[in-house]
Amino acid sequence: MDDTLFGLLQGALQGNGTRLIAVIIGALIGGYVALCVLAWLSDKQQDFISRFYRPKKVLDADEESFFKKLRAATPAGCFVFPHVSMRALIETNHWDFRAPLNLKRVDFVICDEKLDIVCVVETAGENQKKRHLRREKMLMKAGVSVLRYTNPDDVGQDRLAADIAAKIEEKKAQFVFDEA
Image (cartoon, rainbow, N blue to C red; front, side, top):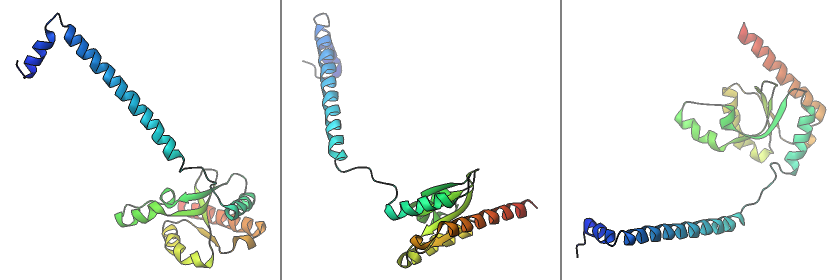
Protein backbone atom coordinates (compact mmCIF):
# COMPACT_ATOMS: atom_id res chain seq x y z
CA MET A 1 0.00 0.00 0.00
CA ASP A 2 1.22 3.47 -0.89
CA ASP A 3 1.75 5.80 2.14
CA THR A 4 2.02 9.00 0.14
CA LEU A 5 -0.74 11.58 0.09
CA PHE A 6 -1.70 10.54 -3.43
CA GLY A 7 -1.93 6.94 -2.34
CA LEU A 8 -4.11 7.83 0.67
CA LEU A 9 -6.46 9.90 -1.53
CA GLN A 10 -6.65 7.10 -4.08
CA GLY A 11 -7.55 4.62 -1.31
CA ALA A 12 -10.20 6.97 0.08
CA LEU A 13 -11.79 7.43 -3.34
CA GLN A 14 -12.24 3.70 -3.91
CA GLY A 15 -15.74 2.37 -3.48
CA ASN A 16 -17.59 5.33 -5.03
CA GLY A 17 -16.05 7.83 -2.57
CA THR A 18 -18.06 6.63 0.42
CA ARG A 19 -14.89 6.27 2.41
CA LEU A 20 -13.93 9.90 1.60
CA ILE A 21 -17.38 11.16 2.60
CA ALA A 22 -17.15 9.22 5.87
CA VAL A 23 -13.70 10.75 6.57
CA ILE A 24 -15.01 14.28 5.85
CA ILE A 25 -18.09 13.78 8.04
CA GLY A 26 -15.91 12.34 10.83
CA ALA A 27 -13.52 15.31 10.60
CA LEU A 28 -16.43 17.79 10.74
CA ILE A 29 -17.98 16.06 13.76
CA GLY A 30 -14.60 15.91 15.49
CA GLY A 31 -14.00 19.61 14.79
CA TYR A 32 -17.47 20.51 16.10
CA VAL A 33 -16.91 18.52 19.30
CA ALA A 34 -13.50 20.18 19.76
CA LEU A 35 -15.06 23.65 19.35
CA CYS A 36 -17.80 22.80 21.86
CA VAL A 37 -15.22 21.65 24.39
CA LEU A 38 -13.16 24.82 23.86
CA ALA A 39 -16.24 27.02 24.29
CA TRP A 40 -17.17 25.19 27.48
CA LEU A 41 -13.64 25.59 28.84
CA SER A 42 -13.66 29.28 27.93
CA ASP A 43 -16.89 29.83 29.88
CA LYS A 44 -15.44 27.98 32.88
CA GLN A 45 -12.28 30.09 32.72
CA GLN A 46 -14.34 33.30 32.68
CA ASP A 47 -16.31 32.07 35.71
CA PHE A 48 -13.02 31.35 37.48
CA ILE A 49 -11.54 34.75 36.62
CA SER A 50 -14.70 36.67 37.51
CA ARG A 51 -14.40 35.55 41.12
CA PHE A 52 -11.32 37.77 41.46
CA TYR A 53 -12.81 40.95 39.96
CA ARG A 54 -15.57 43.17 41.26
CA PRO A 55 -16.50 46.79 40.66
CA LYS A 56 -15.39 49.49 43.03
CA LYS A 57 -16.28 53.12 43.51
CA VAL A 58 -14.35 55.64 41.47
CA LEU A 59 -13.75 57.85 44.50
CA ASP A 60 -13.21 57.01 48.15
CA ALA A 61 -15.33 58.74 50.80
CA ASP A 62 -12.97 61.73 51.28
CA GLU A 63 -12.55 62.25 47.55
CA GLU A 64 -16.28 61.96 46.99
CA SER A 65 -16.97 64.58 49.66
CA PHE A 66 -14.46 66.99 48.09
CA PHE A 67 -15.80 66.23 44.59
CA LYS A 68 -19.31 67.24 45.65
CA LYS A 69 -17.97 70.45 47.21
CA LEU A 70 -15.88 71.16 44.12
CA ARG A 71 -18.79 70.52 41.76
CA ALA A 72 -21.03 72.88 43.76
CA ALA A 73 -18.32 75.58 43.67
CA THR A 74 -17.79 75.26 39.92
CA PRO A 75 -19.70 77.80 37.79
CA ALA A 76 -22.45 76.71 35.44
CA GLY A 77 -21.13 75.50 32.12
CA CYS A 78 -17.96 74.07 33.63
CA PHE A 79 -17.30 70.40 34.28
CA VAL A 80 -15.36 68.54 36.97
CA PHE A 81 -13.66 65.27 36.04
CA PRO A 82 -12.06 63.03 38.70
CA HIS A 83 -8.91 60.92 38.29
CA VAL A 84 -7.78 62.09 34.87
CA SER A 85 -4.66 60.62 33.30
CA MET A 86 -1.77 62.99 32.69
CA ARG A 87 -1.64 61.54 29.19
CA ALA A 88 -5.10 63.06 28.55
CA LEU A 89 -3.98 66.51 29.76
CA ILE A 90 -0.59 67.10 28.18
CA GLU A 91 1.38 65.63 25.34
CA THR A 92 5.04 65.39 24.59
CA ASN A 93 7.10 64.16 21.70
CA HIS A 94 10.09 63.42 23.92
CA TRP A 95 10.35 59.67 24.49
CA ASP A 96 11.81 60.04 27.99
CA PHE A 97 8.73 61.85 29.30
CA ARG A 98 6.08 59.53 27.84
CA ALA A 99 6.57 56.74 30.39
CA PRO A 100 5.95 58.93 33.46
CA LEU A 101 2.80 60.30 31.83
CA ASN A 102 1.29 56.86 31.31
CA LEU A 103 1.02 56.01 34.99
CA LYS A 104 0.32 59.38 36.58
CA ARG A 105 -3.08 60.92 37.14
CA VAL A 106 -4.41 64.07 38.71
CA ASP A 107 -7.17 64.21 41.29
CA PHE A 108 -9.60 66.54 39.51
CA VAL A 109 -9.72 68.56 36.29
CA ILE A 110 -12.03 71.51 35.75
CA CYS A 111 -12.94 72.24 32.13
CA ASP A 112 -14.98 75.01 30.55
CA GLU A 113 -17.97 74.51 28.25
CA LYS A 114 -15.65 73.82 25.29
CA LEU A 115 -13.87 71.19 27.42
CA ASP A 116 -10.69 73.27 27.48
CA ILE A 117 -8.75 72.80 30.70
CA VAL A 118 -9.31 75.60 33.21
CA CYS A 119 -7.18 74.08 35.97
CA VAL A 120 -6.17 70.92 37.75
CA VAL A 121 -7.16 70.51 41.40
CA GLU A 122 -4.89 68.38 43.57
CA THR A 123 -5.67 67.26 47.09
CA ALA A 124 -2.68 65.94 48.98
CA GLY A 125 -1.42 65.64 52.49
CA GLU A 126 2.07 66.78 53.40
CA ASN A 127 3.48 63.26 52.99
CA GLN A 128 2.34 63.18 49.36
CA LYS A 129 3.53 66.66 48.42
CA LYS A 130 6.98 65.55 47.21
CA ARG A 131 5.42 62.98 44.92
CA HIS A 132 3.26 65.62 43.25
CA LEU A 133 6.01 68.17 42.57
CA ARG A 134 7.24 66.59 39.33
CA ARG A 135 3.70 66.19 38.07
CA GLU A 136 2.95 69.83 38.94
CA LYS A 137 6.10 70.99 37.11
CA MET A 138 5.08 69.05 34.02
CA LEU A 139 1.60 70.58 34.08
CA MET A 140 2.90 74.10 34.58
CA LYS A 141 5.40 73.70 31.71
CA ALA A 142 2.47 72.70 29.50
CA GLY A 143 0.52 75.79 30.60
CA VAL A 144 -1.97 74.04 32.87
CA SER A 145 -2.79 75.84 36.14
CA VAL A 146 -2.81 73.82 39.35
CA LEU A 147 -4.80 74.44 42.54
CA ARG A 148 -3.43 72.48 45.49
CA TYR A 149 -5.21 71.90 48.76
CA THR A 150 -3.20 70.09 51.41
CA ASN A 151 -6.20 69.61 53.68
CA PRO A 152 -9.34 69.52 51.52
CA ASP A 153 -11.66 69.09 54.52
CA ASP A 154 -10.76 72.59 55.74
CA VAL A 155 -11.44 74.27 52.40
CA GLY A 156 -14.81 75.99 52.20
CA GLN A 157 -17.02 76.09 49.16
CA ASP A 158 -16.67 79.89 48.96
CA ARG A 159 -12.88 79.66 48.79
CA LEU A 160 -13.11 76.97 46.12
CA ALA A 161 -15.52 79.11 44.08
CA ALA A 162 -13.21 82.15 44.38
CA ASP A 163 -10.11 80.13 43.40
CA ILE A 164 -11.87 78.58 40.40
CA ALA A 165 -13.26 81.96 39.30
CA ALA A 166 -9.73 83.40 39.47
CA LYS A 167 -8.40 80.57 37.28
CA ILE A 168 -11.21 81.14 34.77
CA GLU A 169 -10.35 84.85 34.64
CA GLU A 170 -6.66 83.99 34.18
CA LYS A 171 -7.60 81.71 31.31
CA LYS A 172 -9.74 84.42 29.68
CA ALA A 173 -6.98 87.00 30.10
CA GLN A 174 -4.44 84.58 28.64
CA PHE A 175 -6.76 83.92 25.68
CA VAL A 176 -7.19 87.65 25.02
CA PHE A 177 -3.43 88.16 25.36
CA ASP A 178 -2.72 85.30 22.94
CA GLU A 179 -5.11 86.73 20.34
CA ALA A 180 -3.41 90.16 20.37
